[in-house]
Image 1: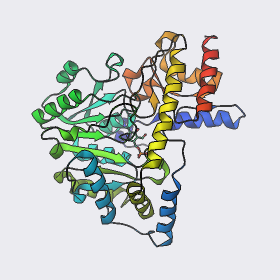
Image 2: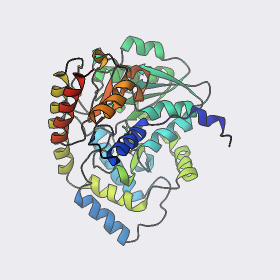
Image 3: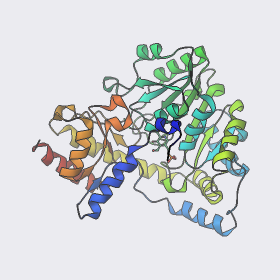
Image 4: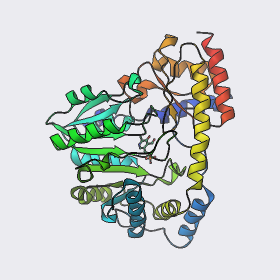
Length: 387
Ligand SMILES: Cc1ncc(COP(=O)(O)O)c(C=O)c1O
């Protein structure tokens, strides 16, 4: 069978393959500590599950309008508005099955051959994949370890051209756990205004802060009109399997993105939307206690990694990933990932799963129990002595 040429441009998210490999080893009887996949290990809080069940029982089993149920869009808009500090219009909110379609549809709607799209590297691998799939040119914005995994402002200046159609920012960042300083966001805002580029601000980790508070690029002049804010429930409410994400779009994008939803998935599952509304409206205690636990885990993994010869690990300010420099071990990132899994039974992801600037690094998701993090560290300590 001959696939369409465009398929050769479509990448993937290797986290799913790495998980499958580790699961095979586990099925063969090996003990594996899973620090690869990026999802909270907590269950969806009970009040949200109950809201989903009640929605199913009361008939939320049908199609909904493509951009989402009006009442749910209103609840999301009120929540986003309160956080972002301006009145968000519910008509500008589009609900999708997870946050991923927001980046997929935004890139498809805006970028084509001849356009340049700036994206963080190391960064979420779907950005680059989708930019290439759309036929546009990916322009990596390197995140530097020396800058706590943030871009260099002078370098950034050289990346922006009249062809820049879209600039993607992701703070807190996957895989680095970095948080963009306000002055860097401001610089990007100024550049976007200068060349009339749209900004896709992926704020899916907005609740995962261990220091400081979330700042959105929408706060800078001219940005509300040119920013797509991507958000969702997968991480904050441990709802990865419910598939609910959403975007706040500038006016001109609402109809085209809704049309993409109609053409692809029709709508997001009705009961998931109702459960999402319940999650947002309820007291946020479950989010706070989950983040507090992640902070304890962060401290364990970062301290432990820094005690291992050949590994240095900056302290992540947000998200739930540590991104240590492993170049002192004399292995490539890919060798590190493969050998750590095979020889020590610890599943992680190579830095290069997140782009070429991830060489020399690895991503450790600390979405696992304190006990398992201690066990992983014990195994790694022992394993490095065999290298
Ligand atoms: C940076 C980033 N954006 C978006 C997503 C998409 O999440 P989902 O589609 O599961 O809601 C993820 C998930 O890993 C992510 O890490």
